[in-house]
Length: 239
Image (cartoon, rainbow, N blue to C red; front, side, top):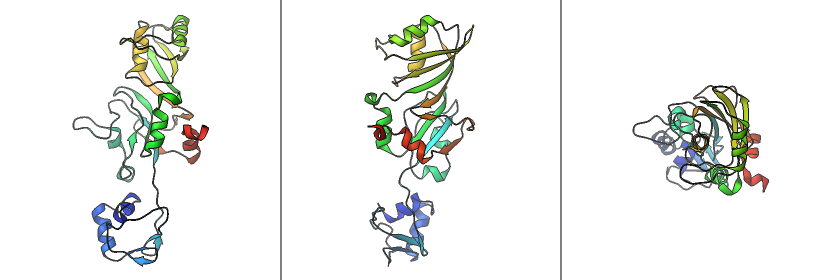
């Protein structure tokens, strides 16, 4: 890793600002003055100090966001506001990305990280990571629907879903439900209900694996995951 990138990633300024700091002779690597911003650094092995203070390197970032409606799950877009736009510069410098996606009109739990291996594990179909959604449906959801989802339903393109666990929270003209699935097909929850002749009018993801949406996070708010939450979320820890 370049020395200027190391300092920039750890909050010591913009790339331009840290280059100036380095050239002014404020940085030492393993006790030796280093004025080359492009000097290669091994964060795991090299000791870097700035004005005599050690630089503690943080490689990965793990965030929980309560994604609001009207924002897309992407890193950048020329027309739409993205979940990355909701982060501060402090988080953006780590170049995180959303793990999976929620539709523009869907809100709720979204994990953002720059740990590509963890993201791959969470999204791998082989891992069967459960995702639970709260939804409001435009008509009454019945025990027949519960049974159909438990068997797996046929989507509009002929794809047969894996079994899902459907729980009816409140029946009526607009039923409230929770649905747990282990797949992530495009618009899957909406398409599963369309397969039984119903429509989703509100959708919110409330959990992913062992991670549950923090009730204290308002739409658009986010926080770092605790070490315990990251460990519990990582399927590799369970192998």
